[in-house]
Image (cartoon, rainbow, N blue to C red; front, side, top):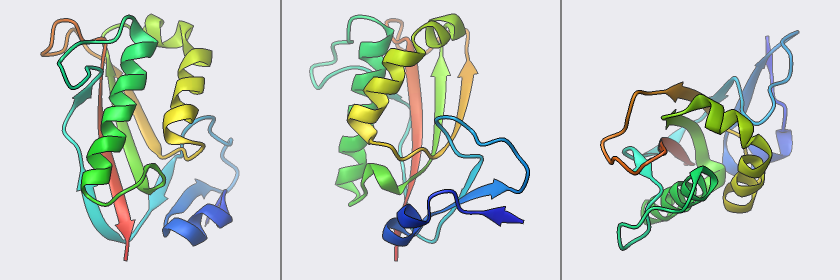
Length: 143
């Protein structure tokens, strides 16, 4: 049986966090989310600004990629709390792990304390040679 971990969030944005009974509580993500509504999907979003310049360093690129995702969501009428899934592609898993505290801070500053289902994958490289991270996002705007 699944339970909601944040009932107040589900009441306001139509999402239900799925947490199987007896499973350890995840930190910084959800095991699953159930939603009904209009779907908003991004492509792979990298950490460059509107002029195509990449941030200096991994955390700066993550922050910019998340800000870019927020801008794309807004174009579709969605907010960060409508996110149901993020898939992160990084070129260096150690770079991610050694920056967890700064990443968490940047994440909360851009997306708040809503934690959708997430996956993290290390890849050999990304299409943009200067990119350290690429993130795909899926959001559901409630009916």
